[in-house]
Image 1 (tube, rainbow, N blue to C red):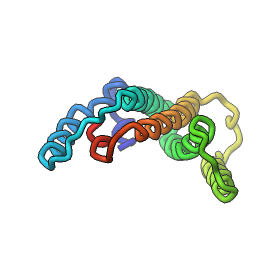
Image 2: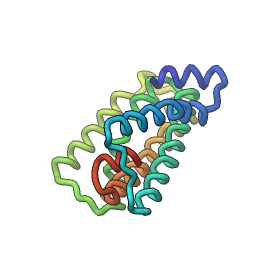
Image 3: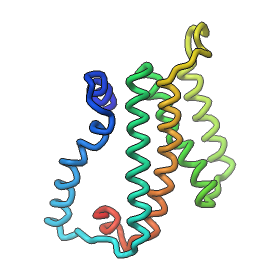
Image 4: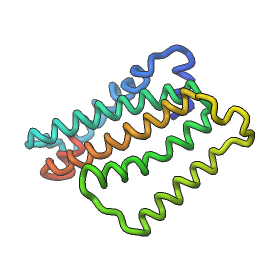
Length: 168
């Protein structure tokens, strides 16, 4: 999917269009399937819609930055650094939601982060400290993506059941 998004961006398609075009087809199909299965149920708590809009808005921003990262740096770098989304989600969950991490979870987060760093470490240190705006875009996407995860979790607190969450 990211290869296709990069190709579209290189062909001049706007990153915002790339981000939202799949929703124009996917959402109506999803709603139709929920209606046909009898599980279409709108959430009744207005707070859900605030958090869900925040999730969608922030995730769209993250996706645009990820596409810009794909266009402006090596695909491999964007994919590897982009895999750190779990780290930003975990840190934001601890900070904003008050969730706690066990010692083993902290160890695993550090280990996985070190793995990403070593995996993406350049073979040649020449130019290593050079400014790479694609990497900066990707790091911004990862950070912003972590915030959208918090909004997703907050939205789940304001639905009556899973069907309402999916429908929302």
